[in-house]
Image (cartoon, rainbow, N blue to C red):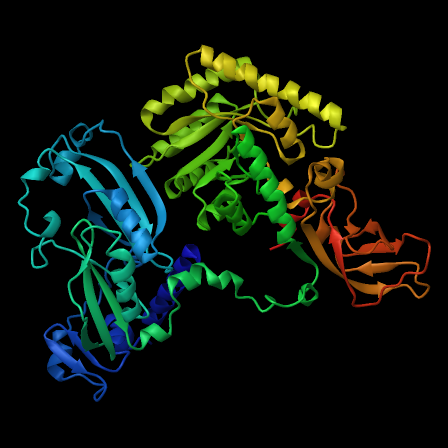
Length: 617
């Protein structure tokens, strides 16, 4: 959204530039600030002159002369508007908690700093005019609206020997409303009366020091509307304004509607499944919740953390259901693009279980780390470790990446041997002193085990985890603690729990379950139900009823040699015998003529959901 908004602004500036060069730009276009001021009926003030543009669309001559417009200056070049407001608070976390809890603000990023180095060592004491022993332990950025580039509040927490020497002028040590440099933040609400009642009943009892400045609120005409306004005092003493606009409140949805209920505001909600357009990827939530419940209970019983893999369904909404309702700890993705998408949707504990080496993607990672609470990435090469560290170091405020050293445990794809892992871990620990990276633990993936026969899979999982255990032992013998050992997957998560080596298991597909997980990987024997589905529609039936074609080909249901062909969920008389790009071919499973009609909807169970999910929006 930010990039689209920025492009539109640049296009508009280019159009204005061309109009100006061609001599077609009117005075109103040359005075955009004044045109905006006069765009609504009502009273507007510009400089010393009050203009009632509801009755008069022209200005007195003196007013025109008072508007000094340079023919060469148009303000700062490429200005895109207000980005954020920064305020210094006594406790950044408390202030963030208050704004998130009371005003629906959203966490954007944070930086936590150790006491060393102080501002004096950085040369910042003279730059900012503060004591040389000052340091900034915590900075938090919050998003307080849905505009793409604006509506941010940055909270700064400082520790300085001379802070206590500043005279306490107002409540809580905050400046009085009339003091020079005082500031406040303001939120617009749709129903001020309801908000005030909520604050009295829910906020004041919960947050010490919160009270109203004006009750009842002020009411006055502004911008051609009636504005109602009141202030509350925050827990740290700063004033927060609440405003309601008589007309504007009818044209903008509230934040909770934008971020919550709207995702379910779909015309098909409440309609039969057959109402969906085909082909359509569906998840049976009853099966999904049943499977997730099984996995939650099993992980909890063994004291192992659950980090679900999301590369198959790519749905932040499903992942949030696992983290908020079923105890999953963060999410696992395989690409930087997936990580960005999940971060944008509010996930703040993300593991990119892959190596990232291109300069563009590495820089994206270094920036994404500022937007989430924890960002992990796999490494198996010293040069890549330094590359990631350097990318983070380029920013004045560094937010470290957590590096997971990957061990090759038999899949022979990525990773190093246990002995080779030790110097890599030592390098990460050396770079920790720069604040750019942190050692997150060891990772492995036994991707060669999913469809092995049960006994062979159990034995191979134990062998693979023995390699991880050896790597952990060698690293700890080198004097470095290993807190996280992560690996496994849905196909062998039961064997992983029994092996007892992993502290975290990367299992996501089992929460949905398809033909591969249910039968070839054996999860049906452990109580899992099939939940991943594709709705298709019959588009052609042969005259002799020997075959029928549906509109879901391999571009809709995917294809993987482990998974095989999809199968109909509810029709035992039908069998899938082939896939083309846009079609599924059915034949009769009992030798009788097919009893299907053109337009009939058929629910398919995909062979392997990970080869299908990315094909759908």
